[in-house]
Image (tube, rainbow, N blue to C red; front, side):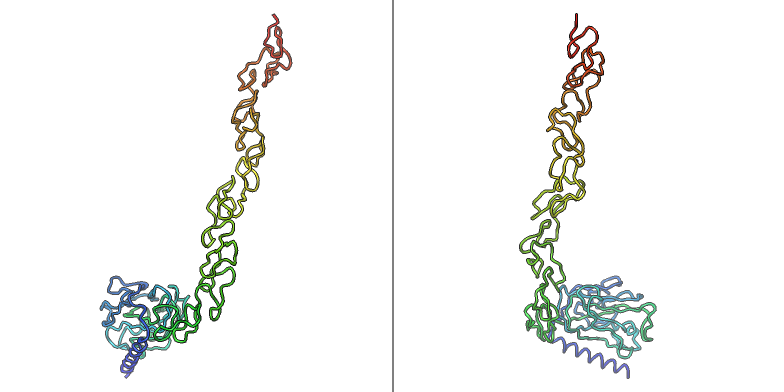
Length: 417
C-alpha cells in the first residue's frame, strides 16, 4: 500500500509539472552546471541534470548528475547566466528506474534536501525555496516540484548530514546529488510577468516583479522605493543604490544609474567614475599637474600636490617646486654654498660649483682653501718669499706678515738686490 501511494504521488507531481510548465520556459536547459565532489567521468557530470534527458534515471545511465557518495554535504547549482524571474522548480531524482520508497536504497539519500535561488553561488545569500522536513521513505516523490516566485541567477540544490545533528531514522549517514534533471521554469527576460511572460512590470523603473502578481521585487539600477519611484540618494547609485559615487566634481552630478561623474572629477581623480587617483607624479583637476621634487615615491598628494614627507635635496615649499634660495643647497636648503666663482652656479641639490671656484679655493664644493704655498684661481699660483708661508693669502698671494730677508713687495717676489 505505501508503494502504491508513492506511485500515485509521483504521477500527481509529474502531471503538475507539465501543467505548470505550459506558460513558462525551462530557463535552466543547457546552462552551465556545477557540483561539489563530482564523480569522475562524463557519466556523472553536473551538466547531465540540465541536458533535457530524463528517460533513464539510473546511476549508470549517463543522464544524471552524481557526486561522490561518502560525503556529509552535497551541492549542485545551475547558472542561468543572468537574473531571471522564476515561477517553479522541478527536480527528477535518480531512482535506478525503480519507484522510490523503503525498498529503494536511494530514497534515504534524498531526504532533507534544500533548494535555493540566489544571485551568487552562495546559497546563504539567496532565498530558501524549500527545505525538506516533511518527506519520509514512504512519501518521497521521484519528481519534486516547488513554487518559488522569486528572481535570481543561480538555482542551488543542497543536502547535508552534519556532525552532531540528530536526523530522523529514515535519513542516510551520507549524501550525494543524484539529480537526473532540474527544470527551472520562469520568464526568459526580465521586466515581465504573467503566465506567458508577456505583461510588462507595472512600475516603470521596476526590473524584477512577482511573476504572478506583478508586484515589484527589485528596482532597475539607480532607483529605490516601494514602487521604484525614487532615485538613489545623493552620492549613491546602481542596483539597490548600494554603490557609492566616486570623487565627482559635483556629487549631485553622479549618475544614479551607473555612477558616471557627468561634469568630471574632483581634483586628484580620473576616469568615468572618478574612483582612480591620478597616476604617480600627477595631481589636480584632470590630473594635468606634475608633482614637485618630493622626497620618496608616491608622496605627492594627488589632490593638491603637497609633498607629505618633505622635499628632495635642493627644493623647498609645500609643493617642493622652488629651488633653494641663492647660496643655499641640500636637504631642507640648510647647507651654505662654498666660494663658487659664480654664486648663482652653486648646485641647489649638492652644492657643487658648476663653473669652478673663486680665487683661493678648490674642490667640488669650493670650501677648501688652496694648499699651503698656493693661491689664486684654481690654486695655480705659487706664494712668494713670505716671512711665514702660512701667512700667504690663499686668495691673492699677499704676504700678511711681510717678506723674508732680501725680498720686497706685497707678494714678496721682488729681490732687494
